[in-house]
Image 1 (cartoon, rainbow, N blue to C red):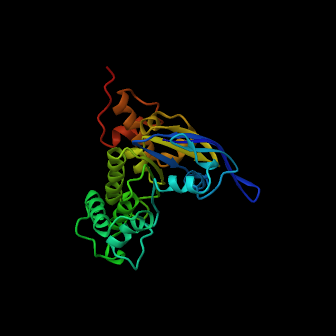
Image 2: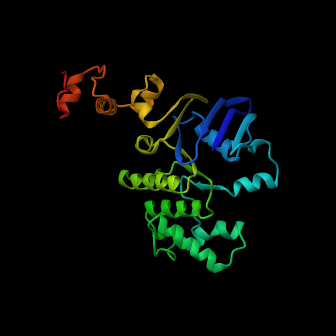
Image 3: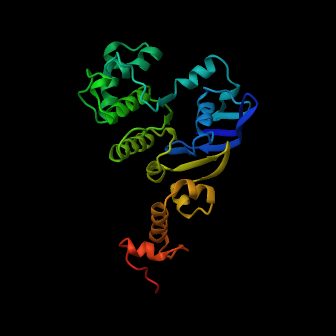
Length: 278
């Protein structure tokens, strides 16, 4: 579990993160969402240690990461996997070499053991047999899966994903979401995802932290979003009339009750059967 307690972060006197607290549990996908400039990327960088908070604490399994120095921080970083927005594969290395890079950096395992582990994680992301291909030979979805394989090759306790579906088509995005969710549960990792993808929010959002102007505006699960009355959250998640209608239809499915909709005809007109008023 990762606990964030009263984090504050400023740059050049401008407060970017103000008094944010959250609990991100193992075995679930913890999503940080918000508009551009909301502070979600800065928050994630504070959690992972790329930025040092001005005040507050970041606890990894009860250990205060912000108070650690040197070898203590290195030990925690060895337990962190990172899936970068652009995959961040080395163009001059093939798939096998890209995935082996963390093993070579942090372990003294013999080559055979490292190759066995590379093949294990490639199998886990459904990419058997692509070891010798270079990034330029891969599709966008394949690159993401290679990057995910590299992120988990050291068996991390914590997985950070920065916009994992950026640049992918909707179908491939669902594949990546499913993999992240499955791997999170399978290895009981604490997974933290920064995302703009509302499909991800509704598919894998076990815990969702919505940031607004540097503060925590709302937190809850993907189901809680359906019933949320927070106007800022609703205008961000369900920005269009179509998505608002979809939310109302989901409320009907969840409760069987009629939502207070501005135009019920819009729902029925989209092919939904008239609600049972009995």
